[in-house]
Image 1 (tube, helix red, strand yellow):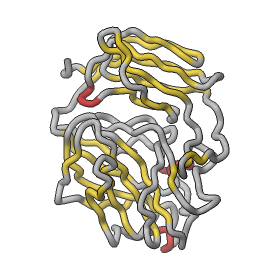
Image 2 (tube, one colour; image 1 turned 45 degrees about the vertical axis):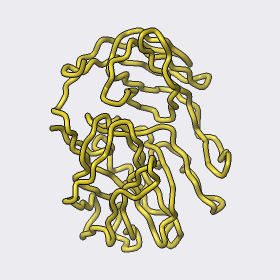
Image 3 (cartoon, helix red, strand yellow; image 1 turned 180 degrees about the vertical axis):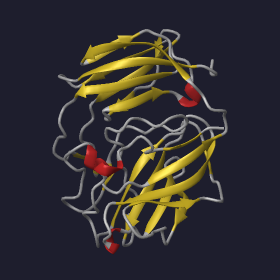
Image 4 (spheres, one colour; image 1 turned 90 degrees about the vertical axis):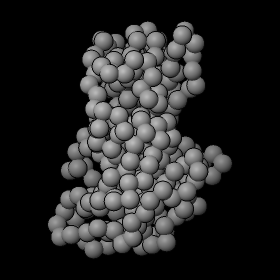
Length: 271
């Protein structure tokens, strides 16, 4: 078994306060499990002692079925700043390769809002942050913050227990790139680290969705053939397929001026 929090590698000192007190608003962090597993806990981060900072609900959305997988209301709270945790005894199941959202809502809880993760290092196996990020809202003037760190202003988090044993990885090397790269080193995970990326753009509404700050895309290469394109909008990402399928290589293409590195990681107990 292997257990991790989605935000376990995030510096909690960077959380800000809830700037939407009293509004019909819900935000969340999206994630995709790398293996089948169970949700074991939810938590949220209290940035100060203001009672109005407390969400009215925490929940996990299954975006494949567009249903709520699990919810908590009222949410856990205690004195002082820091994480407020709820153990999930029901242990709802999540599936590899399916996208979920852990969210915190205020007031009447808008039905569907999605934030992706900013520039935190991806957690350890088995969770992976999802890209791209987007925000659906009918209210003008509500959108993404202007910095990568404040993308986490509320800090709803989820803990997952994998149905596979813990894993370890071995680095097979890394390569620096400018804008695009084709890296043909076999790996289960490619760690993408962007040192320079385009700044956040103003809101771009497409079919009612805010789709700003898409840095680029990546394609898995298996058997010499490119797979489905997946989007990049986080400064640090794990590029991986469900069940950590071994890839022959990876192709990335990003906005002009993007600089970074790709590291190839093989999982020691996955073929």
